[in-house]
Image 1: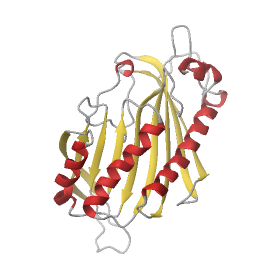
Image 2: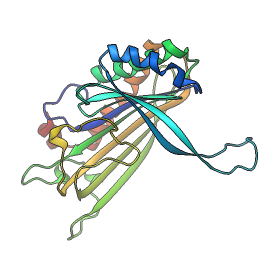
Image 3: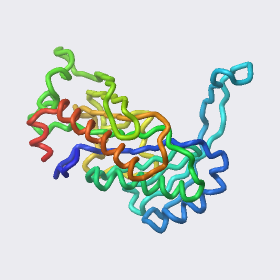
Length: 266
């Protein structure tokens, strides 16, 4: 997941930064969009959606959940292979045409720099990377040949509709936050290739080799690694933190997949 594979299994990836909320973000969107437009992201689409807001401790009573209308802004490449999702307290860079982390991580920082230039952020509160890898066995193969033994699930003489395993790890990271959280989920199913409901490639087109509409046996490795804490808006240090997150993702990818899988993707 670092040096480029000719047949890489990544079909969707995102990098995200949370920062101090900017309630007036809508006032600054034009400036941010104009900078990112000139840097290769000319498509612009505001998105409105409904979200559930649950009052936290210490807030005014009664603490009843509220449905509020929220807005985000999509800034996307002309070919819809990659883009940004901007919201009042987050920026996300996402792509359906992943190459290597050397091209991927700097793009999140490009977007964050555009936001910081416009609004003068105080701090970053969360950084994360998340990958979806598709295991699509070739003719005559099975998903078991691609996944290590602990992920094979129950062996039963019937068609598997769905199976899922989840592991959560406390990780060592650096340099800004010493501890991170790594979540690895492996889904196995007989279905078209899809996306988790909290990770949809809004505004992007899927790479042709992953446009699988018919039901077929496959697996998806969903790897999410993040840190939370007050981090200064210093791009060099944030880049180091993201590289630290990625190094762990690369290691767990190797611990999840077999030599056969890496040979098929190389």
